[in-house]
Amino acid sequence: MEPTNSKPFLSALAPPPDPARTWRRAGWMLIGALTLAALVWSVIGTETSLASLRRALPNTGDFLHRLWPPDLTWDTSEARPFSPPLRLAAAAVAITLQISLLGTALGAAGALLLGLLASENLTPHWMHHPIKVFLALVRSLPIILLALLFVAAIGLGPMPGVLAVAVHSLGMLGKLYAEEFEVTESGTWEALDSAGANWFQKIRFAVWPQTARQILSLTLFRFEMNLRESAVLGLVGVAGLGLWIENYRRAFDYHSVATMVVVTMLVVLAVDQATFHIRRRLK
Image (cartoon, rainbow, N blue to C red; front, side, top):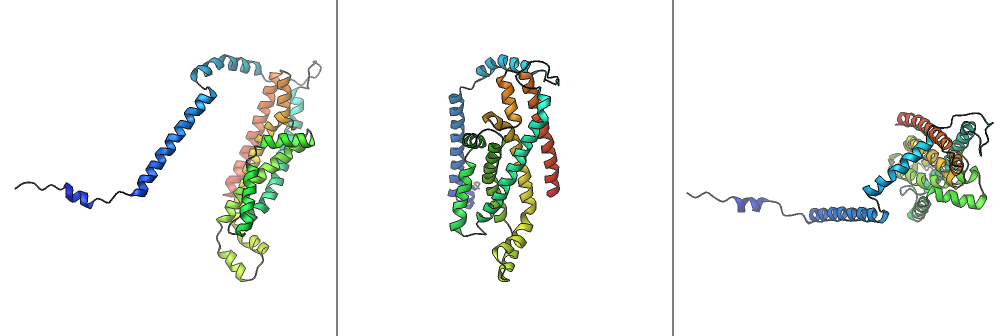
């Protein structure tokens, strides 16, 4: 007796090919190919290669040698363009923290209102859609470009930094706040609505209790980001640590540059650790 061929039987039992799965696989392959092509295009356009990196190593080593050791002097008797960095560090740190704190507070206050109005479950489409577009437009502007525009408009000093941080925080936090508001449970909202509560009362008793911890955590995270950004804004004339780093660099005082960079790193690290522990307790 000849053995029975089971292949036709098994093929009949096999499920038919899923067109959706085939299209998904083709889509992922296309995305991978486009990503690879974009990376190759970027490498060619930026002329990045191991040879160019190897040629840059001597200059990098020379620059690091000029940075070391950091200037830790306190004496002002020596003739120099600027005071020793340690004499200026405390005031520079204070200004940088003030810019970050005030800018974050102003941005968060505006973002809280716009985030509520941009939530799809809290406002009608004609209201939340244009606000979401506005927040996206605000986020599209880099913070250093905002600072440059404010410096040109109102002059040098800390105020352009405060406004740049506030506007950029408004765009980012407004989006994040809205996303938190949109995932709240609707049961309490509906109960208050049936009881005749107004919009503000429903926000106070239905939305805010569910999102307060997340809102505070997001605000602290944004403050960390703003502190780092504020140190960079000195490149366009905003007061603070970044401005003194740029002043020392222009004076070719690289030892003082190193001191200010170390101070910046220590301040950012300290704030990062403090906010990390606070955010962990909020979870």
